[in-house]
Length: 87
Image: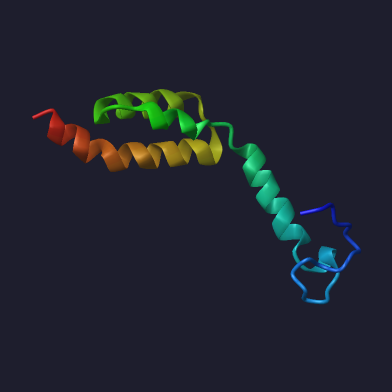
């Protein structure tokens, strides 16, 4: 998307000015994208569930905010699998 000014017509075609239509939602989305500091791509090379569990725990120790919550949710979801494979 090219740069759009606040007073330009909104890109959605509503006929409203951008600042009265999608401006706030777009700013919020950009802010959320900037806040994420965890590189979840490191999970692609994980070979087993125990390695994944340890990696997530290590990542959650340094994460903050929404990233920390997301990591804790992932840890909780895989806990039954790690418990099962330990028996």
